[in-house]
Amino acid sequence: MKEYDKKIIKNNWWLLRNEIREKMKEENVMNITNITKIVLNSGVGQDNDKLEKIKNIFYLISYGQKPTFTKAKKSIINFKLRKGTKIGCKLTLRKKKIWDFLFDLININFPRIPNFQGFSPEKFDSFGNYSFGIKNLNIFPTVPYEFILKNQGLQITIVFKINCKKKNKKFLNLLNFPFVQIK
Image (cartoon, rainbow, N blue to C red; front, side):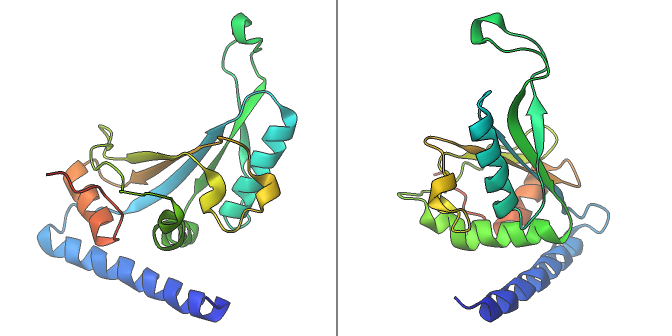
């Protein structure tokens, strides 16, 4: 797909978001849901080489936004872990980058997962946020093969404006998020 075509599609995606908000507004004007942020998180351990690679991967996935390192909150002697040691990376996407990331995730990356059936619709927490994990980072075409770590996963949390699980699920359904059909 050409860059020009991708820009047109992403602009249509932004319009689709506004149409979905209008559909949700028809039901109840007072409680309109929206995505406030998307949080990406990955823990890799204490290896500095792996930490730099995952930092570069996050940078490429998030369209140039720099991630921050997460640090150990307490010391664990059995794992030779000290308090304050870097053990992972996290990144928070907001505003326009949310929609660019979601567009690529739903339309480009998820179809690249082998034997993909969809995600469980029951992974909403008590605050109405949706969390899921990706087991392999090979699905992101922007990441070069030499950056990929063996068996490295990624946790993604979609944070919503309101706490209603039902409305948040409907919002994701209207965005064509791939949920498993439970019978």
